[in-house]
Image (cartoon, rainbow over all chains, first blue to last red; front, top):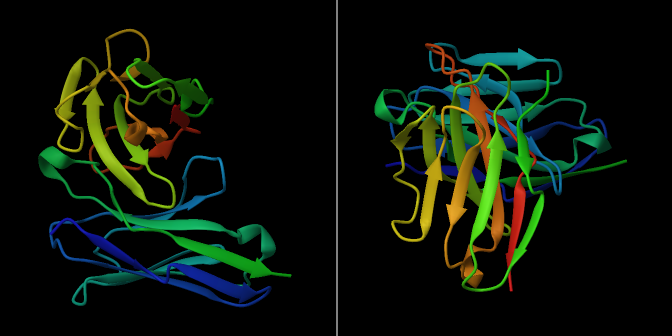
Length: 114
Length: 115
């Protein structure tokens, strides 16, 4: 019930293309869904996050789409650039005594070719 | 505004030794989380602390691992009698803890190698 499943495991995109990474969750108590970007040897950096009261959130080239009924959410990177090459993690958390505890997906290694 | 700080960045220990990992949260943040990342895997929650309190330690092994966040000073993750399986990157994250805001900001991590 606490799992977050992420796909694909790896993704190769040409410069200027759209990168799409998908996540699915099981626990309907989750109410916060962030995406993190991690470069080799660095800590994860918060990219964008969404709550279930909206179906889409956009910040620059990054968009989260959220489907509450399907318990799925996805990250879209428009106009992908070589500098976007990194590992991306989706995550989810819920309130209550576990407030803030993030459950992460397995990660997607994105490679953007010039 | 300095981000989350962790030290040391790299730590090498022999089996049976103790490892101490330190985390200083962002200024104004009162909540600290520790996560472990094994090679080629995602991050796994270990423990969630507020000042002087452990709120949730459900992800931390019952033996050899302990964590604290004292009133003064950094949060400490302590691993006693380390084994090779403890080799991983350990990340600390902090959040403001204000109502409705559980954005977490991560430090650069401590990479523990057990020989």
